[in-house]
Image (cartoon, rainbow, N blue to C red):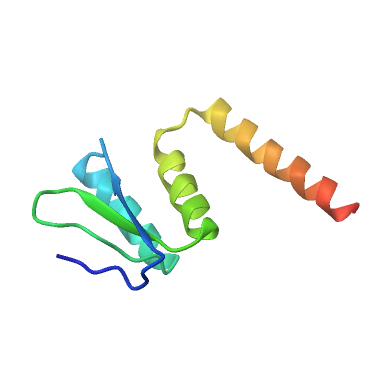
Length: 88
């Protein structure tokens, strides 16, 4: 069993992900330095230590499962939020 690196960490199971998609998510999270592992039951467990980790996890999974219009809308909202923040 894996022990989280921090007592403040949450461990999330990424559910309903095919084996090939699970490995894509696993490798991308490792590239982002987010701890994750695949136990022998085939699940994907992810250690979320802060808000940035949670956003990166959501974004990584969303890229695989969201429809193109949903991804375009998400990106446009991010750009709008950035432009509003840059004026403050």
